[in-house]
Every structure is written in structure tokens, then in C-alpha cells.
Length: 124
Length: 115
Image (cartoon, rainbow over all chains, first blue to last red; front, side):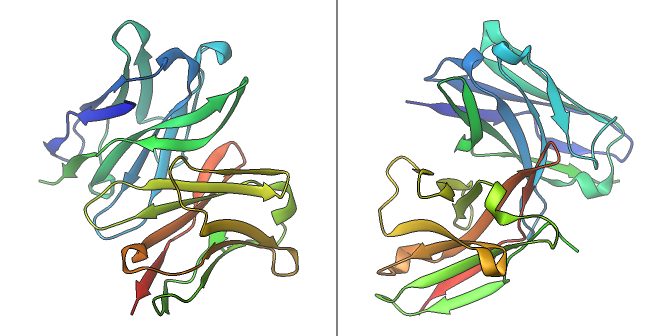
């Protein structure tokens, strides 16, 4: 069974840092792009960023709102995805979802599997 | 102007069909994009429904009923999610998404009420 399990959320003060993790299982992790998507309370979905697969050297892309503050990484030996969040702002408060991109035949598309999410609250 | 615009809400009756639109900003041609659709119920993560670019370039998500289908209205520069034979369990928020300028962009979402 394909599964994504996020962890690491919590309460942090503005300006602080937090690292989220996403444990993947049930598929060949290195074959897939992986994304982080967030959802502020009562609002819609916002893409945070992605890391490409091994074939594309695990390169990354970020939303303008987090570029320079957030860093996405992955550990293939642990089948894990990470989101390092620095210089956190109150507007970063959200549920953070880890998601897998649908990759087949050398082409990757949008997200087809999502984790349950982890909540990050930035408040003093 | 937002890249993707969705009506905030839509109501329809059980058994009827609902057409959810995702309008692309002027200057962004819907014909060149794959439109992705997700369903989200309260307290749950989004679930992938389908993607649609053309009748020859489309995909249904795993386990997604065929009464969910995608299309485009070129004259309106919009992607469309059609849900036929509405059921009470279809009541949810629906989001569209495209890959634009090296980023994924979501629409603001449509809350579908089945009553």
C-alpha cells in the first residue's frame, strides 16, 4: 500500500525554525517527484515546493512565498522527504501535506497520493 | 488577477449533474495546459480525481468513478470538472491545478453542496 506519513509539526514562535518529515512506503521513492502543499486554516491549497526524482538529480522548485526560507530535501536511504522551514512567519500557519507526483514512463505529472498532513502554528 | 479562478460555491440536487469551472487568467491559453482536479472533504487530505488536457491526453485517478470527468471550454478559457449522477458523498471542496511558470498553481476551490 502506498503511504505517506508526515511528522514534525507544532507550535513555533515567529522567526523560529521547524523541520517537517514525510515517511514514504509502498513505492520506489527515488522514481518520484515529491511535493509539499499547505493549507492555512479555513483556506485553500497552496503549493510550497517540490524535489524532482533521481533522474533529474533531485533538483528543487519553490513557491515565491517561501523561496529563501524553506528548503526541501530527501533521504533515499530512509525513503523520507523533509521540509526545513526557517524565519517562520505567522502566515506560514497551516496544515502541511506531503504528496507524491504521478511518475511513469519517464514523465511526471501532478500529485496522486497525499499524506494526512501535519499542523504548523506560528504564534508568539 | 489570479492565475486560476473557481466559483466559491455551487449547489446541485442529488441525481443531477454539476459542472465546476476553472477559468485561466487572460493570456494563459487553456489549450496548452493539463488541468488537474482534486476533491477534499472536511478533516481529510485532498484526493486526486483526474487530469485532462485533451481527449487523447487524460487520466482518471485510481478508483475514481467514471461519473467524474474532465473537459475544456476553449471559448471561456476554462477547464471543467463534470460530476454526473450526484450523490450526497460528492459534497466537498474541489480544487483545480496547473503547472505554470515552473510552479504548481491551485485555484481557490469550489464548495459543492448536494441538496
